[in-house]
Length: 245
Image (cartoon, rainbow, N blue to C red; front, top):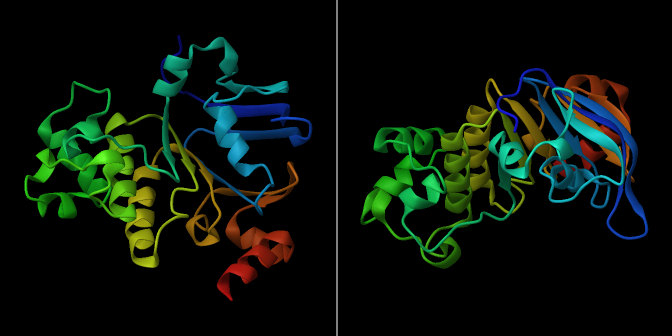
């Protein structure tokens, strides 16, 4: 059982393979409490694997991932996931009311807290316009909502849970530009004053991160903030230029 998060997540010499080939090889990084760390790189560079390992959807083959010095394999999955909020590319929503989708597994929150979470997630406005507001049913997998609305509900859920560690896995990659702006704004509000791990395909979403880690074939090839990496004029700069054409 682990409650609370005090100092850092440390990824220590980890190697991982899904089948025969290593996706991450001898990979180490420290993510200090309160910082936003973003992982970027082309498809297949290993960045989404990091989200899978931090949440223990998979376990490392070698090395270890520790939170405050404790190996996450020594923490129950339940208490590990209580420390984490996950917003992924595909919103996991249920055929139920908006309110119950935001609450998901938390029963102790008030109407006001649910509404505050929705406001941070830029979701309150569209919810208020629905026929039954927060009691409106969203259909199978949220099929009555647009992609951007679904994503903002997922963010509202993560905000309400209020975990110390937030993991965002390609959270804006499936959205059009207008939705992306609203979702990006919501993510930035949510990430304030907490530790965030951002897996990103669109580089516009990571420019404000404290540390940007550039991956290539499972290895770190560059790291620094946006300005430092642009100055290096290396792989990150090329990725940015490719996306701004």
